[in-house]
Amino acid sequence: MYGYISGTIKEVEPNYIIIDNHGIGYLIYVPNPYGFMIDKDYTIYTYSNIREDEYTLYGFKTKEEKELFLKLISVKGLGPKMALPMLATGSINLIEEAIETENIGYLKKFPKIGDKVARQVILDLKGKLNVINTGLFAREDHSNELMGALLGLGYKQTDIKKIMGKINNQLPVEEQIKEALKLLLK
Image 1 (cartoon, rainbow, N blue to C red):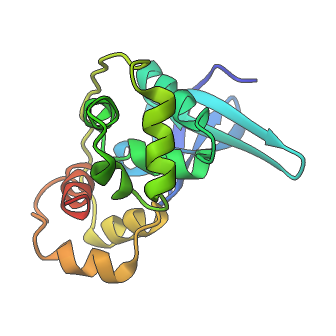
Image 2 (cartoon, rainbow, N blue to C red; image 1 turned 180 degrees about the horizontal axis):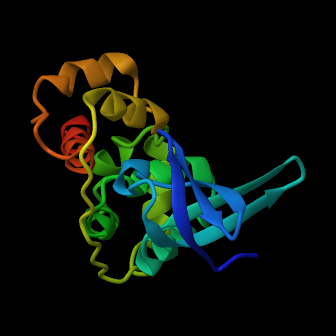
């Protein structure tokens, strides 16, 4: 329904952002909310998920992220809530490489992605993906936001605690999340 929404970020939460567009605050679920800075203007490329009991907006910083998200949710058994954490790593290329090289182990490391779904992703998308590059986004923040972001992506608190000591807390939270996701995917 909406191709994109431009406006000012008013709230950043572990799972979503709220963007103000001419006095209307849109709650948009994004892969990595801490890549957005409050009171800054952004254009968010959106996907509207309309169901009988739910109307949800999912958003992305780039068209390429949105395109990969749309391809992922076209896979049988993989809905928007499972596909969104896959994009949080910020590395579309690694996801595409895993699909093209049939790296089931890499795909299974994402929250809620099991053997059956990983195989279905490869079956449905292998050979249908383009090489896509994404930018890096940075923002200074507190370490408790890192924990909240990872919990929001579906990782277990016990798994997060195991890797927290290995993350450089001097990095911006966006980089901390990427570092944490790399450790969680190993």
